[in-house]
Amino acid sequence: MPVAKVLLFYAFTPLPDPEAVRLWQRDLCESLGLRGRILLSGDGINGTLGGELGALKRYLRKTKEYAAFRGLDVKWSEGSGLDQDGGSRDFPRLSVRVRDEIVSFGAPDELRVDASGVIGGGARLDPEALHALLDERDDVVFFDGRNRFEAEIGRFRDAVVPDVATTREFVAELESGRYDHLKDKPVVTYCTGGIRCEVLSGLMRSRGFEEVYQLDGGVVRYGERFGDDGLWEGSLYVFDGRGSVRFSDRAAVVGRCAGCGVGTDRMRNCSDPSCREQLVVCEACDVVECAAHAA
View 1 (spheres, helix red, strand yellow):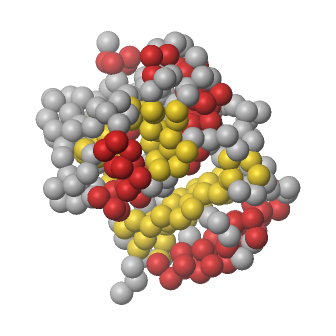
View 2 (cartoon, one colour):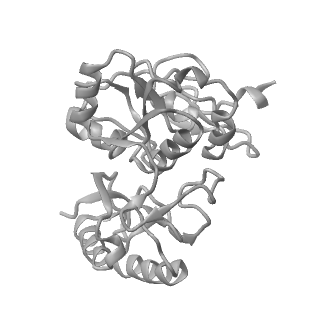
């Protein structure tokens, strides 16, 4: 029986002709029946694809044949299933695009990459190294590198969660002075799969944060290693049809429905068609407007 999987991947590496890579990647995905999103720029590739396990493995093998992508950072997770055409239920279509940034911080001129990846980012910590740092230091601060709504259903214990609705708001948030008291502390940035923190940690360092780390592989890799027996609490928001994923059946429920306050990790768009806000909403309430549109 075909097995549905989701593949999360990225690589920061110079791409002299991202448009040519776009055409190749689009044709490769179409030939394998894969759906999802791939972003390309002169600085690399960022993608999430869903489909049948064998097709995803063939995609990965072919993509890694390209020298720039041999060091692709790859993570696997369970898909929701395949539709009658064999496509992923988690993605309605395939989108392969070229952008100025593969992570949209609105600061393309600040990012520097070479064949080894991002230049000037925070020191990498794998899950074990993170725990070792926490054993040695009692002043470590977790800094959430995601949008605030993602943290509503899951986050690291006692993490600082910046009040940002989009990744593009991070630069202004860092420059606001709200986090200046953290500039002399060890700060560990984290995000879903690690890519946002590749950039965020560098932005923080260039703005005077002295000791910045990034959780290598993000929450996904931490959850693979420690599940719900570590410092992560709740579910992990994902940008596909699954909405969120849990690392075990013992996952804490930290989200609260915007309508009735019941515990849930279910995310839905604000019911106002003009709004892009994401809200925690239980099945009973289902349709709820955000505060800006509920008045």
